[in-house]
Length: 304
Ligand SMILES: Cc1ncc(COP(=O)(O)O)c(C=O)c1O
Image (cartoon, rainbow, N blue to C red; front, side, top):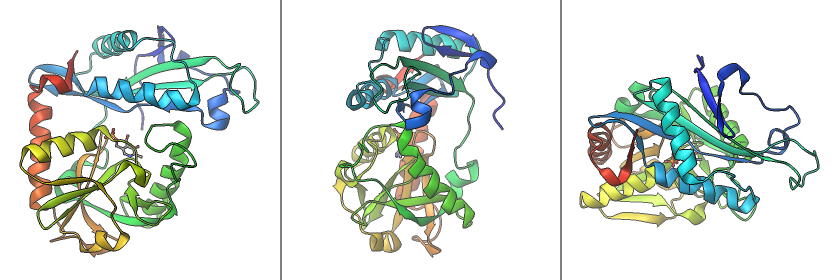
């Protein structure tokens, strides 16, 4: 249950939670024409710090580009608004949701006359798939829904409309008693989770689908690749992974801002490895949480 927050930043000003409204004829509501980010601020040893804020901001602007969404605020203005929001809400850690979308003017599919709206909300949010998931791993199913090809809609960026596919896949999994889904791409190879990138460990090396496999260019994916390479692992970051390889993998794990580094313990009721968090996943997850807790990797944090 979402308990609400005091204020939300909308188009240049802070408004009370109840007043953060948009018109029912908003273009984005009808056609999914918004772009957004999901970011975490962590309570680090250096105080509250936004993890990989610059990269999230860059992706927001990149996401806006193909849709001609002209973000009316500079990166500096969005940064100031976000840090002020976190400070005034008194959060030590939180999830941050910037969204930019076409507002209301005409309901033609062309949004050209619609204003661009920009909003930032923040609220406390714990482990996305549950604390236990981080330790024990999750049971997942391969969804019957396929991910759109990037020739149909850009998949490397974060568009609101894309998430109907994520919703269908995730809800199908949960209806069938699984925690999360894995979505295959149009070719039938592994793409990603509904809100996570996926990694496979085989014979001590790490594999993750490349950008041409219809995946979001995940920032946690990049964090995991960087940390794994620093730890000496070979990472194949442009891999094509077949469905069959999932079942025979030594280890599988998800990465994402919300999911962080979450082990996958079974796929379609087939145990992965020993059916627990594998050793490589464990090492990488520890390295990830060490960074998050210490907050001392300056290039990755924006201190509030
Ligand atoms: C479809 C999808 N894939 C992957 C990710 C992971 O991306 P990130 O690590 O940037 O949060 C997300 C989360 O935003 C997502 O929604």
